[in-house]
Length: 148
Image (cartoon, rainbow, N blue to C red):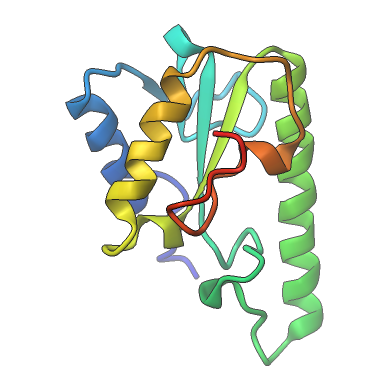
């Protein structure tokens, strides 16, 4: 587990490269914002979290399944992560930030372009009134978008 990184992962670098190539400028891992978002776009008042499917309990994803051993430990750990994510979402939303969550499965080779295009559209869309978390998640399928 010591080899598992929390920052500058391959999916994060992929998203950052895409954003930079499309002319967006951002900051990374801003510690004074709740949850230390992976990418912060101050101009658009938007933060992006790039979550691992396993570590954050992505429902319906084959990578987000529960291990068959030590399930008590893992279910508590993943549930704590999910609760912390929800609290960070609410705090950022209350501060006026638009919050976008990306899952690592959405950055696989087959759906990457659709996901990144939807991400770019979501960032550039004018900020609306705060919505609940489900509407701000990019869908696992590229053709759906839960309000983004």
